[in-house]
Amino acid sequence: MNRLIENQMKFINLRLGTFIHFNSATVQFHAHEIEDWEIDHENAGVPRLYPFDEKDWNPADLDCSQWAKIAKSAGCQFAAMTTKHHEGFDLWPSAYTEHCVKNASCKRDVVAEYLEAFRKEGITAGLYFSVLDLTAGIGRKSCTEAQKEMIKGQITELLTNYGEIPFLIVDGWSAPWGGPSYEVLPFEELDSLVKALQPDCLLMNIGCSDGLSGTDVVFYENAAGQEVEGAFSGPGVSCNKLTPTWFWRDEDRVTPPVSADWAIEKMNGYFPMNINFMLNLSPAPNGLVDDNLAEEFAKIGKKINLPEALKELPEGWLTR
Image 1 (cartoon, rainbow, N blue to C red):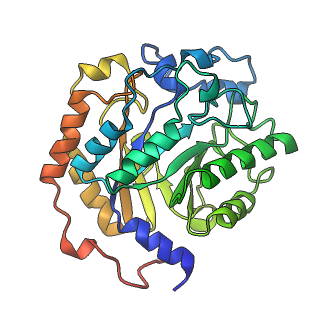
Image 2 (cartoon, rainbow, N blue to C red):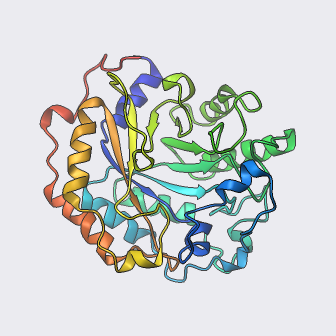
């Protein structure tokens, strides 16, 4: 069997996962009308309004094992975490920038702690990485050779220093709202790097709108209104959330999340189409997930019932 198809099958058989949004936006915008980054400033070219000071990163109660236990309680079999979002702050000590945890008040390597905690719970742990970087000036209007070196260097760090990474989710790349274009930074260029570093690592491109031609798994940001079209039969993944925004907000602690029943109904519609379901976890600035969200995840684990026929895919399942 083709190696890529085999890895796609392995991923689709995981079915249910979690997408952990935890980064500078958690600190910057928890009490702000801005959702999670300065979306208009990539295209409009105006000066940034919200630069992030590394010293403000201080999750005093950070506990990735709590996140992992919550994910496991829901039945999640895979996970991803925002190692770097569009603002550009790195949750690992990168050699390519000073805008990372090595200059923060809390200098802990969150990437390492996340991977260790989720692997301990038997959850397949991948990573998320934004190509768009507002702090480094990488975007639609600028992706120089030096900036490409930074992108590739940071991906190399993530795929070299932390053991086996089964998938890397990339974002902020040739998207309608910003990021370098494929003409400037071709998909094949990053895909070749990823496969050279880790041949079994799937490269999942959130911004891809051309089916499997620019990604190993088709992404549907369902929470942003992206729906499956036509007779799609995989491999795909749909991202959803039980709270209003991806990153934590003050009101999340006192607002009931969307119900577990809603999430189960959604995932049962996707699974027969070979589309996995990722449900967001949003830790608070202190590094812990709120009880109300944790309780809803646990309800999913108690109610979910995957038909036996969906648990393993036969060879030849993939339609391109």
